[in-house]
Length: 183
Image (cartoon, rainbow, N blue to C red; front, side):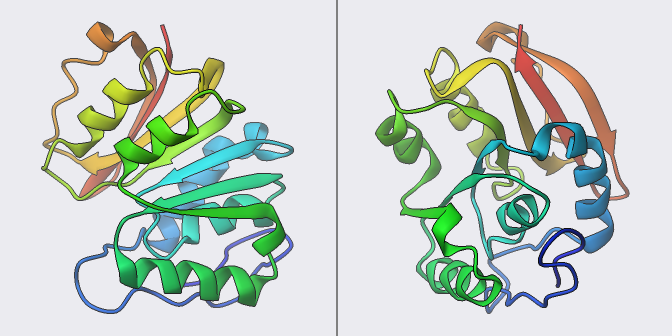
């Protein structure tokens, strides 16, 4: 796994040992950031279920000003910290050692995010819990882009009830990125 583009281009990143974390492939990450490119420069980014931190690090490398990384898996904390140290991005990052919903509640009242990315374990409905916590949150402004990485079979039939609208649904071979905004 590596940083694809930007100031840290081609730098290798560590991955979390074991099979509990499912890293986003380089091809999928490249497609994601091609879509996000007009919004990244100068943005504030929230990376939920961060794993190795590869998505947030890619965002910093491409011009994001600040990334808040959130994960509750102890092995991920060291991996994120090591990757931030190696890429020299620690000054632009904050690591919250918590589950995503608790982190959203803890951050409430702070500066809103321009981009919120989440890659929860598939098929456990964790994305719904986070989207409920973000619904009506001060962390989400009218232009905030929320991206959910999920399995192809994940249902998002509740999106409108929570006050979101889908503006892009990018499907890959085994998963998808659902792009949401406030309705």
